[in-house]
Length: 354
Image (tube, rainbow, N blue to C red; front, side, top):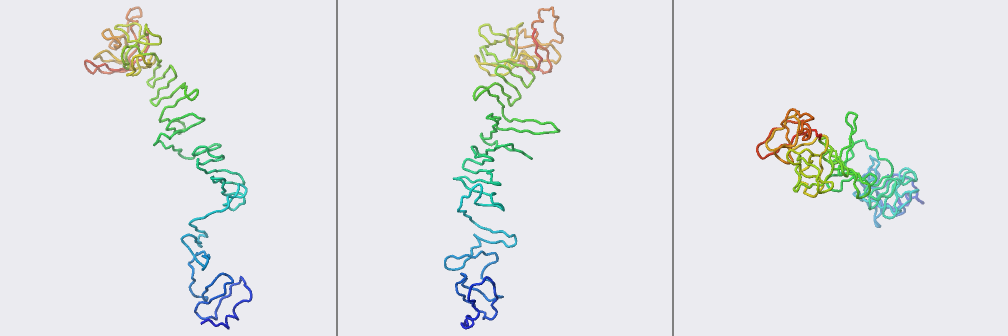
């Protein structure tokens, strides 16, 4: 039982912050008046009623602890909390969640969270995205230069993997890298140069060709121009063509033993009446007449047996005075063996027309 007379002697007349051990009381719990809000204490040397690190609070009736939601990690000097609610929005000058500074931390404006550094808003998070130096208008919106010490990766798994510089679409894959001191720019898709949002002036294709409105530089090394196919059929790559006499800016197949060849179809499958690329200079794959081998070093002329095809079987060119000199279309630079009757091989030739 508690000695009431002893209680009168040990109880202070006024509350003091000094802690005095209780040594002359029995081992049972000591009930103290509720001056401090503490209703139960144990004699010194007995086990504490609270867990190490507990943050004690009143639940309205008793002193309580809830270490799953609020806990002081004494070793690390860390306060652990499951949920924290900051009831003040704060301002740029006086953030609601501060660091060891009066004007550095997080504050809230409307539905956005902002980071203030030395009374200057540096980052804004809102439903649109993240803005660095500004409020975002895209998922990531940055004012100023961006530095990278490593890889800059674009998600190319969807059609949204796009880089836009000054409004120009640079494709679904874009890479700048340096090897042995040489910097390269890689595009996994084509690069188009537009005069406005719809008018294209030049395109670097993913196969290496470079196009303008009417001229193409081919990856093989040729110069092609765009003319209308008026052969009466789909174009066949390597076939020889000459200027059409019935339509402007158009070509037709060369005739047998033709002297007025102007070029070679670059691609197959362009329908009659549509514009097709015609290689007029440089290197081109040229279609040879049926079941004929092409030999590098030979001169090349129009076929004397098939319209639209070439013959690279002659080792020596004709004399400039010879009439057949005007049938010449260039020189063969690749040996390709014939593949049988009914087939036409393609062989690389350097084009020049007499």
